[in-house]
Length: 125
Image 1 (cartoon, rainbow, N blue to C red):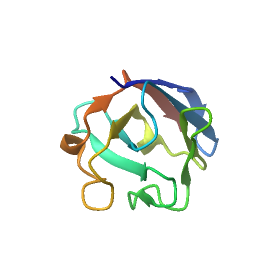
Image 2: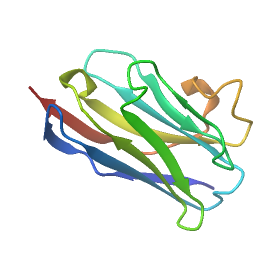
Image 3: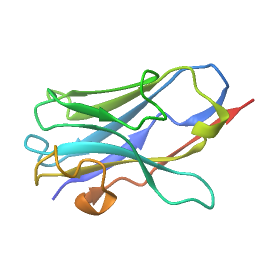
Image 4: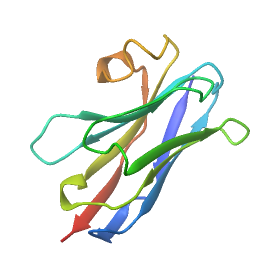
């Protein structure tokens, strides 16, 4: 069984930085991890993903160049460093894990088996 717990959300101002953490308990190796977000009234969308080994990363166009995903397998933790935050980044952020490969389905929420409870990020203008 895999459990994920996000942390690091909060209220920030536009232009600020924030780092989200996703601690994975249970099996961590062999799992790709994705970050998704869901704004009020909108569907959940892909933000970023990192492969099982950490050698592959992917980003949504809306965050490319501002967000960086990384993982520390020794700490069973995946990070999402968010820089130059914008009001449109306001959302609940979720991390999710899957062990069915990365490159073909990293962007699809339905491909992920395990989900965290989410952490809220609010960016004020």
